[in-house]
Image (tube, rainbow, N blue to C red; front, side, top):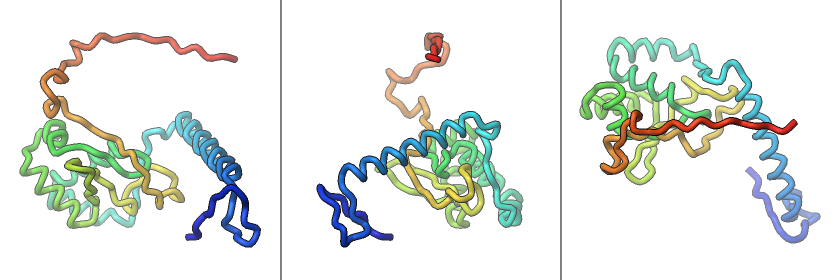
Length: 182
């Protein structure tokens, strides 16, 4: 991959040389294209679509037959992952939402990791689960190579300080009205 050289003036002998203004324009155009892509995605009937590689069917059947809890955890992570195949959550979230013990979570995350279904990345003491994009992905197939963060983050109320542990009933719902200009 070529290095882009950005400076006050363009070096005519360096094809990777651009000015600050040119680079700013490039970044602005890229941001506009990304926003257009996101807007198209919001209108898509496949907003919750996940693609699956049929080449991995036998491995997933093996996982389901031999390690059903691991398969449930994988399905949960796939459901929650963002368009870059990542989700960040604690063992506590998995325990509570899937009604399984911490040891079961730990053991089955290891199975998923050891068999190449997920990679476990660290951000401090938090786990970021990156789902193998040769098995599942949510973006278009030609965008699989990207690994962008932030990830979807799932939190458990039971892990929070006591003053944050509230119930939905205690929250006041505020309705809003969206007004758009023609």
